[in-house]
Length: 370
Image 1 (cartoon, rainbow, N blue to C red):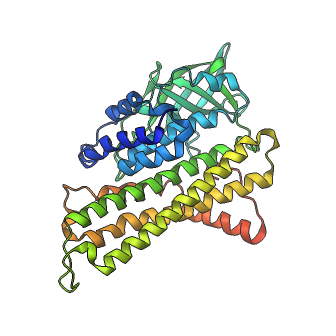
Image 2: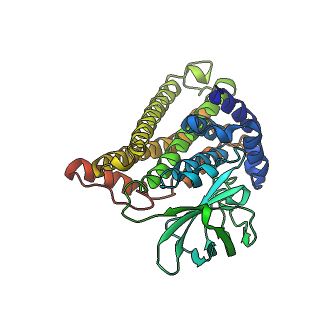
Image 3: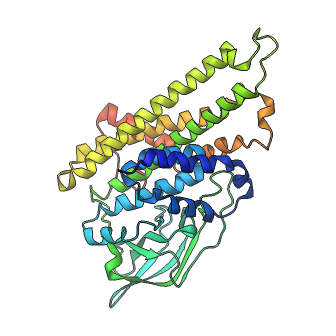
């Protein structure tokens, strides 16, 4: 059996070594995806959560890419089309990305004799510009059905504006994508996505959980690098009465609080992952109540992990001191990545879902985000 954890740690060590420099360079993550491909980690679906967290701790952008890669392979199995899902694994070196922003339903499918033609533009498509294959959602012009299909990322008619230049997650290639008369073969259609499909609605929960795992990874990476700096370079305050910053009782208590919160966030994320796994395994026996319970468990994990990652990536500077803000260290990337990614969708709506379920038993609605 492959030691996916050990392999992920080896890849993470390579990414960590020059993470700050690559973040400043802000180049498309072609080399980083090549590293994931050559390492074999793209096939580590059985250890997806752990690998995503380990890679995210070293480089949140690349953790985001591989986390979504695993997610797209997993969500394909929610459709009642095992042959199409199996074809996605025909080459284990393929890096998968997705084009399915729920708030940007701009792609149109026109039926042909042997499939569809897709046209339109999406504003955000994380990782698509550096992917081998894409999972895409678009709307049929004749029936208004939402259809999900796969396509070669370099197919004729697909172009990438290269317009991603945000504060954080700079190496996720999350810019737009344009489809101009792109052919889709019928065998590459995973299926339709009825808005009331309880099983297919799990895909949205998978996205929320993937983000949560990345948050936990970012917080872990920030803590690890801050601790290394604190032990080796931070100065004790003149009134502390100690000779090393690592002996300052306030710094020790501060790290203790952050570590405890991180442990709790990781445990909640793992609990949510297990709940989602059980719901997906239920197949056609999945009930509305089980789905609701899973949704709330995922939302609870995300609410807490959001708080933890934003607090951790900011508070570490209080323990490292002013010198740690030097650009050469690049510690600000943890906060920038966390702040950018946690704005993916308003976490307050996740808290509302948890509260409504707790107080009234209300089930979270089926949306692209819940």
